[in-house]
Amino acid sequence: MFSQTTEYALRAMSCLALAPEQLVPTTTLAAMTKVPTNYLAKVLQQLAAANLITGRRGVGGGYKLARPADSINLLEVVNTVGSLQRITTCPLGLANHGPNLCPLHRKMDEAAATMIKLLDGVTLKNLIDTPGSVNKPLCDARATQDVTISGSIRVRPAPAGTNGHHR
Amino acid sequence: MFSQTTEYALRAMSCLALAPEQLVPTTTLAAMTKVPTNYLAKVLQQLAAANLITGRRGVGGGYKLARPADSINLLEVVNTVGSLQRITTCPLGLANHGPNLCPLHRKMDEAAATMIKLLDGVTLKNLIDTPGSVNKPLCDARATQDVTISGSIRVRPAPAGTNGHHR
Image (cartoon, rainbow over all chains, first blue to last red; front, side, top):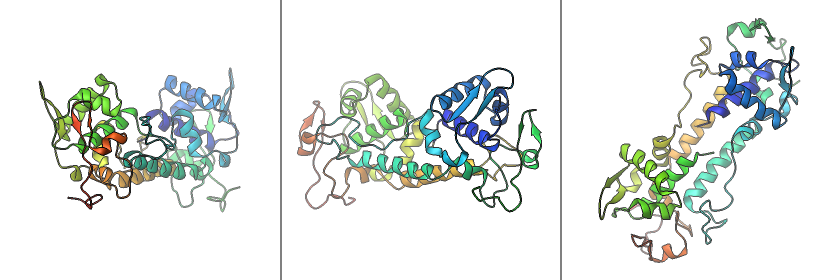
């Protein structure tokens, strides 16, 4: 349903949310998200242009979230690389339809509204602090046990008692 | 949210549902749906390959629905030209995730499940026989008043008292 670019953008943002204080190199992000480096680099440029992430070039450079993970919702990410919009007027430009959508476009608008509500209500923080979740996004077993991955990104398990709560 | 191809496929199927007994030429469908003819021709080939429509070449040829409009739902159309599937296993292939999706992919799967349910529950017939709807898909004012459009497709308003009921 989501485009490949959208899937990759969500993976990258989830990955950065796991290590919000670090500048993560594109190559490390590519390895973590299993996305071709060149493809991911373009996605990251779009996310940076939308001010969702900030980057620094050169040795020790990379990307990190531009804002706290609890202030970035999935809808922002999806709409940075794609378009999830309500249908407000007839896409065919039929004069007598206008804002009075026909049943086809009313249903498509209902679908868009449903998706917008679903994605608007979930932040990156929610994804990495889901109560009762065994898995963290993109992390294999080692990653949840405080092991350095790919030489650069370190993911720490949440302190006991805080998992699922916003800090 | 939906790809352009999906939008065009839904327009074409809605259009054919308005005149289920007629073979509608591609050029007429293109005019009705406001889709470039060559683009639409490829979409129609996909719909025909999936046995949603049947076609005949030559003079007097065109396409019509392969089955009654009340037996074709929007999900079938969407999945003929795109892919709207549940996520059943980790898209990254992480061994320790497998069917235990992480919160990111659980949310994306929830979105897919929601869309599938929404589109599975609506047939082409529902679109053209929506109770209380002023507009029919793709039709301008004239089309709802039994006027021949583009020299080929004739859309008759539903007989009094039958609007909204499956016949």
